[in-house]
Image (cartoon, rainbow, N blue to C red; front, side, top):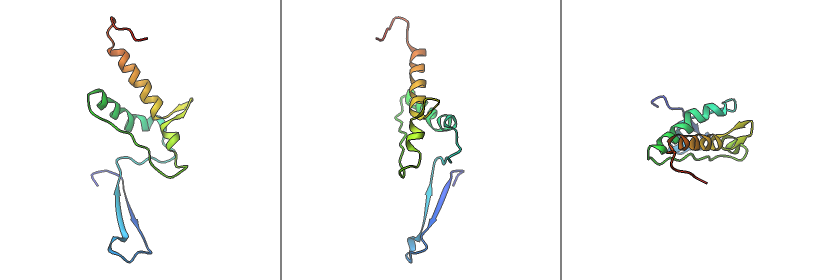
Length: 104
């Protein structure tokens, strides 16, 4: 798996050859993972690549109640990916802004 987390799912009720399926994931986080860790490992590289001219997507998909809203939005005291990415994006824009340009 080249160090990537994998999951092998077996359907005991299936009699077909496809009773076993393997899924490979880029990242797997449990409920104890800190928002900062998810941002540093997943969000920041996407932002840095986007600022270098590459397209990037962070897509949250899953079962109801699995933590998508928490991971993406977070809370005021523990922001998720979207507020952290926005803060970093505008910080980087501010660093690159030339003094003669003003944005209202």
